[in-house]
Length: 93
Image (tube, rainbow, N blue to C red; front, side, top):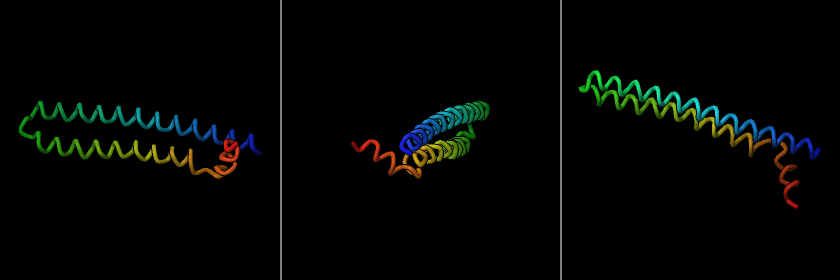
């Protein structure tokens, strides 16, 4: 039972690491594309910079929230799994 609990914990930590890495990569790409488009729009029409900036900031906040959701799921995978008590017992010695 102890070996299975430890294997499950290792799988959860690995999944959490890959999940947050993929989320951070995707959010970084999306934010870069959004920022590039906003700067291009302001360069073409400087008078619209106020509206474009506000819309860009709202969009960046929405994109960043996706990465925060991935972080929450990763933390749940690590700390709130069914064998948490068994794993804590392994490392309590």
